[in-house]
Length: 266
Image (cartoon, rainbow, N blue to C red):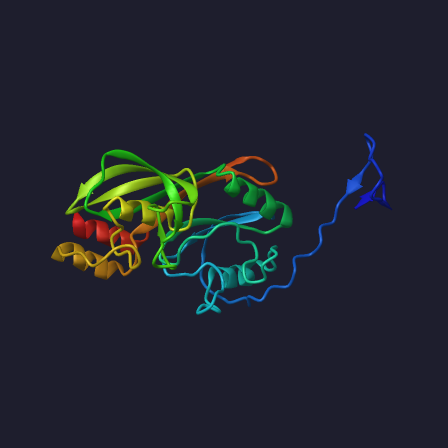
């Protein structure tokens, strides 16, 4: 950092009218390699990128997924990204591999820190569309604790004695054959939160391989098998721009496999 062209000292206090220049350190090297993979970009500027993540794409490299991830694709298309974790540069939130929809990725240290604060404070708008097996009330809010399942460490549960607060607002959009299309608005953002709340309420997501089970109804079972993933789409993401403060809001339509499941159950 310089003040009026001279290197600043730790004890120096700037005065009104002085020119301050800050040059952030470059992003650390990443273990993820750039890959020329197709992604859908909804918005980009010098500070952030908003993408419509495809279902089936893992967000960042992890055991069993060294490549082919969203991070690999973004590094190819946009170059270096900030972050302390070399496998997850730019990532401030995640979507499960089987979940499609809108995500934001930071391009600068300043944007990353501001976005992480916004997600930690739940100071944004997040809404999902989902197809549930069975039915839910027209409007219902699930407010529970959220923690690891006591017997299966890969799963989470709302039926725990200790955990973090989790709140999901659910609105039934329309009834389907032995199922329903619902809109879920997150007040908090825990891992698998929507999947857990709906499954624990007796209405698991269609096709959910972790929290659901193959439906007995033949029509539901056929729709789930054709979909091949949980019927969950991150439809809306709204937040204040991490640098300018301008309101940003992005809404994406569900992909064709989700729409095909809807048509099969209408």
